[in-house]
Amino acid sequence: MFEDTGNPVRLYPIPFRLLAGAGQFSKYQWIEASVSPSPTDAGPESYHIDSNSLILGDPVPTTQDEWALRGSFLFKDPAWQFGSVEELAEAERAQRTSLGIVFPKEITGVEVVARSAADQIEFEDKIRRINEEIEIAKRQGNLFEEPVPAEMRNLEFLSHRIRISWLCNGRQCSGHKMQVLDWEVAELHRREGDKQALDKVRAICDLSKYATRFFLGNILAHPTSFSIVGIWYPKQDPSLLFR
Image (cartoon, rainbow, N blue to C red):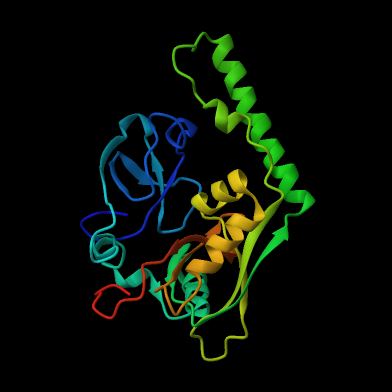
């Protein structure tokens, strides 16, 4: 997001070398970069990044008051905070909003679900394109910098995902079922398996213990369908400003 306004942004493309390896950045860390509105995505949050201009800044760690420092930035702009999924969907229809924060009223289930054959085909196609890019770089003599870390090239398809069933605060909400696309959850799932990932997500979805909020996002191909792209889960504490 932009530090001065708290407006959320979606940056593309992020080089794979920055998602793994020595040059990676963390989930809560400032960066500086030259950006411009996306030429292919009309969503107001979508920006194209000049990856060569990217400079890693300071991380924003948890603090003694449980994530309040992070919250002071994340919740600075009320325009991307929505009372319900339906309000977010209306904003998407009106102005192509693609990101929003929604507070769950009730968690009704957390489960592991199998991904579709179409998901696997799409994943394998992406890995194929990555390896083709590497071969092109080799033929062009660009061998001094690994364009894609080995751990990204050799990822296996994650055949299952965590799905959360929940109610938002919409007056006529009948419930939502959304897959969790959060990177940290996916990596935990990949490293340690279904049970560990399921236990972690179930724990942070306990609304009696955590002030959980969902970061919801869509994709260009399916703008009306939102998934959980991140989870905010400081512990419940009445003294906190950001809950």
